[in-house]
Length: 119
Image (cartoon, rainbow, N blue to C red; front, top):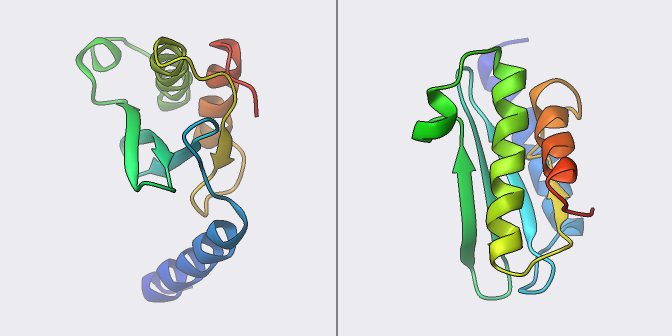
């Protein structure tokens, strides 16, 4: 499959997910973006179009850790859960961003659950 076909297919999957998944101030959307080297997570209030909290594998405390990309993804999930707890948020809606729910995306979700988020 050519790159243009891959990106078009993934974008269509993202549109399909976004039609169903939306975040509010009380229950924000936990959006995951996965690049080849890093992973980025945001808590988004779609009603107001505002990012409430964010974490990534490029944050200083996570980048300083040694380990695989999946292990760092779990730390990113725990970091965003910690930031959500500081904001008083308990539940979120998970948005996998068109990626399959395995590997690093699953590790983020498990890390967020370990941190106390429910979804």
